[in-house]
Each structure stands twice: as structure tokens, then as C-alpha cells.
Image 1 (tube, helix red, strand yellow):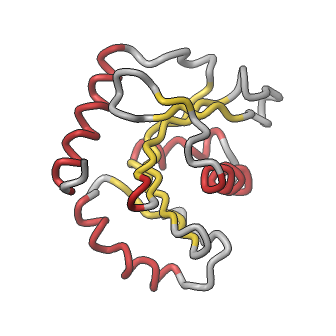
Image 2 (image 1 turned 90 degrees about the vertical axis):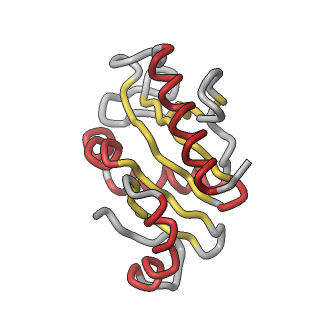
Length: 151
């Protein structure tokens, strides 16, 4: 498990107990970071966890998370996905800026202070999601929010 704290005085064990109830609901997600100051939690689906290391170092990923905490609405809302956002991020390993760099697909659950990290990829790999992928994201988020009783 990729675990580290962002400006927080709590241990990973303490944080783990605090969010245990969320992990029961989000069985396919992993808690990876928690910030006391911002009161945000990052969750990753398994496929995101498996691929993020191919695109970002730990320090680069921390920088991405810090940026997201300060600007949770930084990514553009993706139409037909139920509120997912696509964030453009510079790809230092390939020397690409935001325009030609990485794409991060996430959902910002504002009321709970949670970022749900779904996908990361190079723009060269995929320009836009297909209609079927958009429908799948929308269905997944609607199902999850219904289970939580969140509008």
C-alpha cells in the first residue's frame, strides 16, 4: 500500500482506523493520503494504484495531490460522466507540459473531502474516453453515491 501523510501529525495506523468505515463501503479503493489541514482523503481504485508508478514518482504524485487539495475543481468536468473530472498534468519523464502530458481522471466528493482516483494515462495513449467508458464511470458513481445516500 502506498501510504504517506501530507502535512499531518497522525500516524497511518490512526488514520486507518478513522477511515475504516469508508473502506468497507469502497472495497475496491485504497486510502493513500490524509491531510489534517485540508481534511482530505485520497482513494485509489486498484488499477490506478497499479499504474500510477509508471507515470509519476512518489514526489511527483505528492505534488499532484497537493495541487488537487488546493484546487479540487482544477480538472475539467467531463460531460456524460456524472461529475468526473479530467486534470491535465505535466509529464516530466517525457518532457511534456500539461497540454501533451498526463491525464488524471478523478471524482471530488466535496462534502466528504474525498478524492477518488480512477485513471492516469498519457495523452498519447488516449485522447478522450469512449462513450461506453463515460457511461461506465457514470453508472459506477451513481451506484456508489446511492449506497452512501449522497445526492
